[in-house]
Image 1 (cartoon, rainbow, N blue to C red):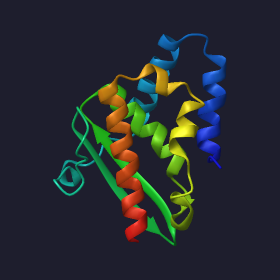
Image 2 (cartoon, one colour):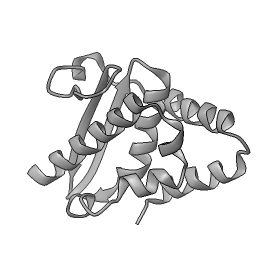
Image 3 (cartoon, one colour):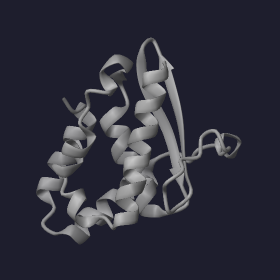
Image 4 (tube, rainbow, N blue to C red):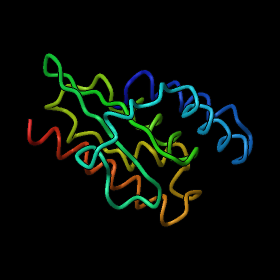
Length: 135
């Protein structure tokens, strides 16, 4: 049930031979994102449970979910970009049905992230689900 943008990332990962290349790829995805405006980096958009500073700014327009985000850590910024590819454009009613952990496992991220980074990803996914459940 992944978006086309996420499927593109999965395909790119298939071409990358080793984890260091994949790690660089994730970082490049983060660098390619527009930075979140400083005015949006407020306590309400900050995600607790992440080792780094993380902000997610959700938007729901026409029943479709999307978000922008930012982090002070390059790899986390890249993980935000991956989550944006997974969730942006998904109807709000379908967000809860996205098995983010299974989708991210297709990339092998589960085995290659530290426990702190994995906890941070879980916190970001939980925030996304909470926003959509409240909508």
